[in-house]
Every structure is written in C-alpha cells, then in structure tokens.
Amino acid sequence: MIPWASPLAQVRLRRGAIDAAVARVFDSGTYILGEEVAAFEQEFAAYCGVANAVGVGSGTDALILALRALSIGPGDEVLTVSHTAVATVAAPIAVGATPVLVDVDRVSYTIDPSRLEQAITKKTKAIIVVHLYGQPASMDVICEIARRHRLKIIEDCAQAVGAHYRGRKVGGLADLGCFSFYPTKNLGAIGDGGMVTTADNELAARLCRLRQYGWNDSRETQEAGLNSRLDSLQAAILRVKLPHLDADNARRAAIARMYSEALAKLPLGLPIPRAGTGHAYHLYVVVSDARDKLLHHLTREGINVGVHYPVPVHRQKGYGERAIISKDGLPVTEWLAGRVLSLPIFPELTDDDVGQVIRALSSGISRL
Ligand SMILES: *Cc1c(COP(=O)(O)O)cnc(C)c1O
Image (cartoon, rainbow, N blue to C red; front, side):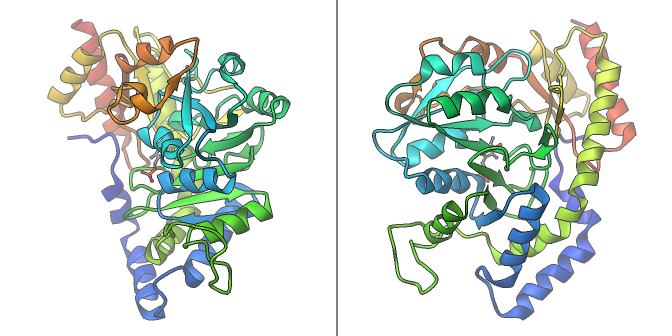
C-alpha cells in the first residue's frame, strides 16, 4: 500500500540522529523549554529569515497565540477561508472572535483577494491567510488591502514551511507566521508542536508570556495566558530534521514535476505554481469531476490517496454556526470539496512508487 504521507519513513531514515538527540534531552535534566527549544527557535528563525520564532504546543495553538498577541477577541472579525484544515477556523473561535469566510480562487485554491474587500466591516481586525497545500497566497495584493484597511495579517504556514514568495520565505511576509510540526507536515515532529514567527520584538515577547500563563522572565504574570510550549524533546528531534528540509522540499518538487508531466494530457485539474513563488508541495492535489470513482479505483490498486478537504469548515458542526459566510458566498470552496484528491507525496516516495500512482490514475481515468 502506498500512503499519501509517511512520517515513519522519515523517522527510519534519521533514526540514529533522532535517538542521539532524544538521549541528549534525557541526560540534560531540562525537560521544559531550555537550551533545545531556544536553539531550535534560533535555527528556525534564521531558516525563515525572520527575527523571532517562539515555540508553542501545536499549529492550532500558534494561531490562537498569534491572535491573542494581536489582542483579537470577542467582538472582532477575522477574515479567512473555509477551504482549509479546520484548525484555521478553530483559532479565531477559540479566542472568541468571529471567523468571516471568504472564497478561494479557482486556480491556486488560496484566498481570493478580489473577494476580500467586500467582506471587511468595522469589526474586521485581521486576515488569516492560508498557504494551502504549500502554495504561497498572493501576498502582494493581500498586504496592500490589509495596509489600506489597517488590518493585521497572520500567515497560516502549517502546510508551507520552506515555501517562498518573491525571494522571501513564508512566515516572514506579514505580521505573524504560524507553523505546525504535526508528524505529516513537511517538517514533522514525533508528536505535536508549533511555532510563531514575527519580525516584531514586542509581539515576540508577548507570545513568550502568553505561551506560559502570562509569565514574564521573573515568573510574574502580566496577563492571563495558556500553557502551550514546544516540547524540549520535539525541539531536539526537529533540530535533526531542519537541516534536511530544503532537500526534502526539493524532492517533493521533483515528484510534483513527474506527476505534472505525466498527467498533463489527462482530464484533471493540476496544481499551478504561482509565478515568482516556491511551492512547498505539502500536498499534490488534483481536481476531477469523477473524484470518488478515481479514489475507489486508486484504493483498489493499493494507493492510499487523501482528500483535503471533503467538508468545508462552514459545513462542519461546531464551526459553521459560529462563522459568517461572506456576501459573495463560497462557490469555489463548495466546488472543490467534491473534486479534490491528494496523490501520495513525501520525500521518501520512490520514482517507482510515483510511476505506479501515475499508471493507476491513468487506468482509472480510461475506465470512466
Ligand atoms: C495542520 C494544520 C493546522 C494545525 O496544526 P496542528 O499542529 O495540527 O494544530 C493549521 N492549519 C493548517 C492549514 C494545517 O494544515
């Protein structure tokens, strides 16, 4: 069975170095924050080309803490998308704000900047821009709109670590960048983990307080906070993997090229990398009217494809009721939910595996 992602393959590959890093933490006697987290934060900030990185408990917490750092809460509206991981929308709800869902565009599947302005009200405080599937959103236009309306921008980089936009890495393109180290992500931990990046030293200092109860350096609380720290063991493991991230992303891009060349003549929508950007290819998503038939065919052929995402967040229980759908509606989001299919893509996937996926997909299409 070929999976669509394989965190195990990467652990196997780097097992010796990971074991040594874990042993180092065991022997250090420091199990919360400490040198491992501080060192990884520095290395990660340098990698992203941003001044500050603050390690937190998960990607969802990264988004929640970023909103808290911007003082966004009850009564505030946050613009974002419905075609995303539910966590993107869970964060504004967790801080008591109202998510306002804007449609994505039909080519890049990221937020449609031409629909942003109609969704802005007096209550709008921020935009959470998702670099979906690893593709940077059209930041130039979005930043210009945000500047004109005095809105903050949070980048949801959970799927896009290492992606770049006009020569700059994601996470450093706006006010705050939020990352997830969920095991299947391009930079995956062996458990939960997350990071917030920012060029603003004051926001970084506030994030450091908010991630542990509101404490300052003297452990006096300054405001109410959470307990959401990046685990020291996970930081040590991520330090093993970070130096390999660019090579891993290059391998993902090579796999994406193989797919794109082989599938070009088939009746499928293929990923179209935005000009001037480096796509991180967290997922390689094709679009087909016969998605469900192809999914069953591929499963029968031993290929475990994914669907990201079958149900838009505004149709999910617990979220839909708490979100506002922007006036333009979500036609592209609805259209995509029934058509997207994620082909296997991860650095350890072999050329033979890729060939098998291409053959299975082609035979599936010829039978339609
Ligand atoms: C994975 C993901 C998150 C959430 O990250 P967790 O670490 O699982 O909390 C948020 N946004 C997007 C787009 C994601 O893919």
